[in-house]
Image (cartoon, rainbow, N blue to C red; front, side, top):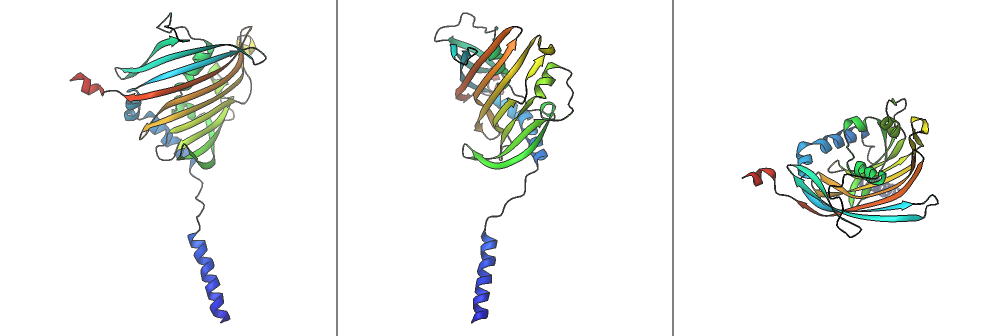
Length: 259
């Protein structure tokens, strides 16, 4: 009887081990980044993404030195595809028709927003960072890999953009199915001064970018939040920017319109 009970206990123990969920091996971070680059630069994906029209609402809060809001500007844009490229049109400023529809003059806040939305996940940029695996997670109900990144040590600083990149750290959420960026949190790890601080400096830059999946492998920026503090010459600049995009619609393929 004792032998029978021992057999039952041992059998039950091994059954539990065989049916228990096993921890997966740590994914290969280099392969994830390489596939992210390949998918992001795929001509099919780029062409499809460039053929999307949508609305973008941009709200910028200009702040005093103590952090209180000095003024606020709300702009609405319409982005439409023309000849395979997205074209941005300014629709309104604070609820009124814009004085300059061409929208050529951009403040530091808006330039930062433009550069954030146009984040090019190419090999030239991503090769400047060391990535490490943090965890597997879910973002907007989709499985993702969470990767942290820091600038590579000893990287050259031949230009102002090099200084900026070498001060940047953050976290990526990479969609496990599409190998596309679902979310990015970026921040400055240290102050960045230009020309010894004479031309200006960036004291703080916290940026969050969230992308929306429109279809398989096609993701586009849906929301951006920027918290910035710096100085241009002798003028201090502080602002918070919030951008949200909506009403995404695919346009008619170029070859179809040509007929």
